[in-house]
Structure formats: C-alpha cells, structure tokens
Length: 102
Image (cartoon, rainbow, N blue to C red):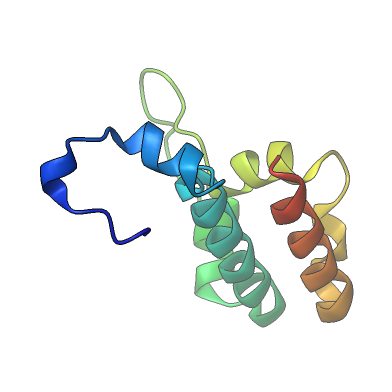
C-alpha cells in the first residue's frame, strides 16, 4: 500500500492509519451482492425464485437461514428493494449506500 517493507514490523492497523484508509471488505461484498441482486430481480427467472426463497415443500428444521434479500434490506434501508426495476435509481442507491459505509 505504501511500499513499506515487511522488515519494519508494522501492524496492518498502523499501515491503514498512515494511509488514511479503512477496511472495506464487508462494504465491497454488500455492494457486489446488491448489483447481482438488481441483475437477477430484473430478469425474473429461476435465480429470482432462489434469491426470494419462494419454493414449495416442507420448511426446514432449526433456525431459518438469512437470505440475501434480508441482508440487503437492512443494509439499504426499509422499502428500498422496490426500486430494483429502475436500473439508474438502483445504481444510485447502491453507490450512496457504499459511500456512506452503512
């Protein structure tokens, strides 16, 4: 990142502070999930059924698994998943959520 040799024995946190950067792996994952979800929801085929979890049959035992939709709904905010049909609005929402770091 700053071309610091490994022999200086600095911690990752110290290097990030010197570079004025933050860890952003979770935010990057959420952004990629949101762009994929927008793609899938606009197509509306088998992938749409899988991500929304609307299948027939018996319900599994134990704790329910968290769906992609649930995680993104909490990340973007309530009522925002309806904007997936409008591609430009969806991209703007994802970019703003990514910049805010929520």
